[in-house]
Length: 85
Image (cartoon, rainbow, N blue to C red; front, side, top):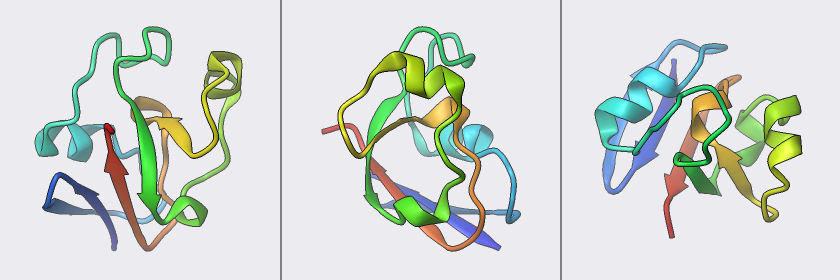
């Protein structure tokens, strides 16, 4: 099992799965949920190596280093913590 952390809360999910549903339950804000609007752009505070590499939509967004679109992330295993700061 993998773990997603956001604002002091955490949720376990299956290894290799999308984190969108768990992140939404933890309070990460979402708009389109399709990698277009950037509403869910967040900084990976811990566990960047636990995520699959950025997909094409994230690369096209041209985000700062360490940021990801939470709606597009899939966790391989381990723990990942996000921050909106």
